[in-house]
Amino acid sequence: MTKIGILHGSLRKESFSKKLAAHVAELFPAGYETEFVEIGNLALYNQDYDDENNAPADYSAFRNTMKGIDAVLFVTPEYNRSVPAVLKNALDVGSRPYGASVWDGKPAAIISQSPGSLAGFGANHHLRQSLVFLNMPILQQPEAYIGNVADLLDENGKVKDENTVQFLQSFVNTFVELIKKHQA
Ligand code: FNR
Image (tube, helix red, strand yellow):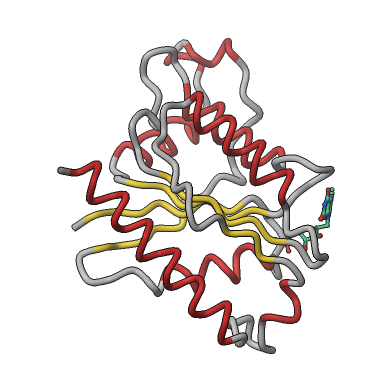
């Protein structure tokens, strides 16, 4: 069983990112299991916590969860033209202590979204930059910028727009190919 960790960059209850992520989680084929990884509880990263004796308990739980994950899907809004702090914080926490990064070598894919038409381009690319540094093979194509997201969801938060449904399925299929390549 290949485990996909899903991290979303918004904590709000009615988050479009979360709704989109819930839809995408259902699109993986048999043999793939998805897990939503909690990141909202992580204290702000502080290098003093690299000492195991000082580390908040949530850090170890998060790092242990991530160690059991084979690939990571990020679904995020854009905050002030960049990655929401909660997501960047999770990247930083997972990247340390030095030499023990939970991200190293794990295939990753990014979906950014916005209720407007820019679709989180800035967040998508700032996130991409961090993942390159963290040595994560990232899905290059198709890129996933989901704009005008509110119009694409029905009243239950399901993706109702048929083109978007098809696009997300092809996005997942290509991500699965990337994952397989790195498992070979
Ligand atoms: C935003 N929003 C926003 N949208 C955008 O397209 N570019 C941006 O830079 C920002 N900046 C920004 C900052 C902050 C602090 C907030 C709260 C919001 C709007 C954002 O796209 C919108 O609220 C989304 O609905 C947030 O995603 P979730 O929470 O629905 O997943």
